[in-house]
Length: 324
Ligand code: UDP
Ligand code: MG
Image (cartoon, rainbow, N blue to C red; front, side, top):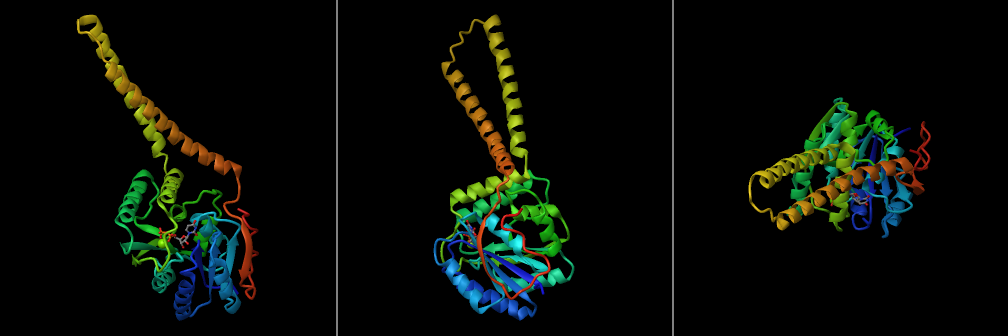
């Protein structure tokens, strides 16, 4: 029998929190009284995360563990979870308990009302730096302004999706996955549930500034062409300004006796225009690089081993690792 609920929990170096998340998730899910599975995806942790979760698998057939062959990233970990989930409703939740499991019954209730996607909307973020809160706020608004897809604001990966939505997203061929965006993109009946984002239970964030920037660029590049259009507009504006200035210079040279010195202004124009040209090349490069990534068609993750869940049987055979 396939479970009603699959909970996907990506974990990267989370040895300090997985025991607590397992305990709290189990308590909440047992309280809901329907079959469930906890699908931990160990994203190449270098600490004891895998060992601890493998321990849960021994005593509890509701737990399954996918071990990645290395660290592939948060989005690939969720993709793997979605590929292997067997439930009728699939829930994604962070391992660090920033998304409180106690919200799950509320999400499930909305699902039973007939909604296909119930996403958690952060009404408040506790225990995160002012910088993170501000950049996150800015990022969600910028991204929304740049794309035609109806992306909800202040929404992370914490959500419940129906089997149909999960299958629709899994069927998309792209490798570079901004999952919350893809879930919006596929449509269906969507609704928000507000919650307060908690402090991390223990440990430190696995999203340092460098990863956050890469993540933002991925999201923008996969949902918007605006930066490329911006490049075109800038090019036009600069040509126009250059043309007008050329007329002015021409006029001065022919009709006035003002001496044209202007070494400084020439340098400014050259530096500025070179800077803009390089920036535009860079933007084009960002997209080109992503096209190349997709073209190479490498799997977005590789699974080293699957532990637990042997007692469950399934109608649909599991996909081969990285089949997509
Ligand atoms: N995570 C992951 N792979 C990574 C980075 C993060 O699986 O390369 C997981 C991490 O273990 C956590 C979730 O993604 O369960 C969110 O990460 P984190 O809490 O560090 O991000 P933050 O909440 O600080 O944005
Ligand atoms: Mg977190």
